[in-house]
Length: 141
Image (cartoon, rainbow, N blue to C red; front, side, top):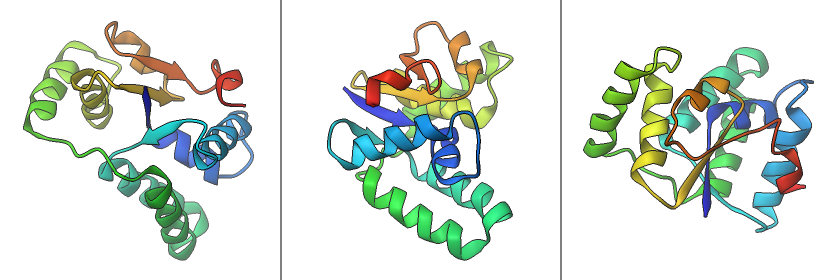
């Protein structure tokens, strides 16, 4: 099993004090120590960079994005079949936004991936293998 990390995991791991920060940092450290395999998409790295730059500046955002890029490579690339599935997910799950629908579709299309997120909206997608960052903290300690 390989974990597919949502933007929320990266944001909390690299961000300011938050209830999920410790869990996110523990997960990132576990991946770095090769206790778990994890990946993400280029789009998640891009979104993290955008969000982090607003609070911490561009240099910090680029530095952290480079760290995550190295840690989570090879990245999982979104392909046409993922987009087709994402559109269906978006259409049928009102709480899931279009960006998150793509990430969900990636996990649904690839049996070896399990999504880790802090976003409860993913739980609406019954077939999606998803772990909530706060609920599963013990798994990567």
